[in-house]
Image (cartoon, rainbow, N blue to C red):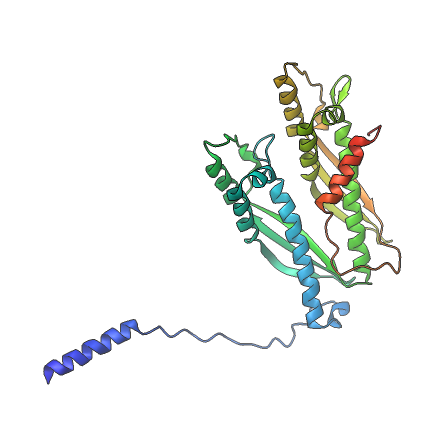
Length: 309
C-alpha cells in the first residue's frame, strides 16, 4: 500500500513539473476617451481609414530609412548599397535590419489633416556584420565615424483634400528642389584652378557613381510650412569623401592632383522650396519621399547640362 502511495505521489509530482504554467489573463480595458485628444478633423475619419493613413506614414518613413541605410558609407568609396548589390549575404543582412525598424513614440495627428510618424533602426550591428563578413575578402577599411547607433526618419501622410495633404505634397516638391540645388552646388565645387567636380564626374563612371551616392546622402535638417501651404526644406551634405575619392582616383592614374577646395565647400547647405499641387489634382493619402529614380534623373540632368552653379 505504502509503495503504491509513493508511486502515485511521484507520478503527481512529475505531472506537476511537466504541466504548463498557467499564464495570467491579459488585462482588457475600454478607453472611452481615446478619441478625445484627436484634432477635430481626425475625429470624423473612420477608424479603418485612420489606420490606413497611419500605415502610409509608416511606409513613408521606412522607405526613407531604406535609402539612408543603403547610402551608409563604409569608407570614402564604398556604400552598403554597393556591397548589397554584389553579395547575397550582405543583401540578406540589410533585409534583416530593415525588419527591425520600429516606430518611436506615438503618431502625431495635426489639425490640418497630417499624421506624422518617426521610425528608427539600429545600424551599428548592420555595419559591423558587413565588415565581419567581408574581412579578408574585400579588405574594406571602415571610417568608424560613419557608424551610428541608430538612424531615424519622419514619415508623412494626410487626409486627401486637406490642408495638411497640400503641405506634405509641397514638402515632397521641396525635397526634390533641395536635391537639385545640392547637385548643382556639388557639380560646381572647384577641385583645381580650372576643374570642377562635374568635370571629373563626366569623365569617370566611378566618380559619377560616387557623385550620385554623395548627393543621395544629404540629410534633411529642417522643414517649414508657409502660410500659402508651400514648404521650405533645408538639407546639409558632406562633400569631403567625394573630393578624397577624386584625388585618389586621379592620382592612381599617374597624375598627381593638388586640390584647392575651400573649407566652406566641404559641407554644403541648401534650402529647397516646393508648392502644393493645383486644386483638383488627384492624389493618394501617402505623400512619399522622392524616389531614387527621381533623384537619379536630377543628377543626370545636372551632369549633362552645360553649366552648373
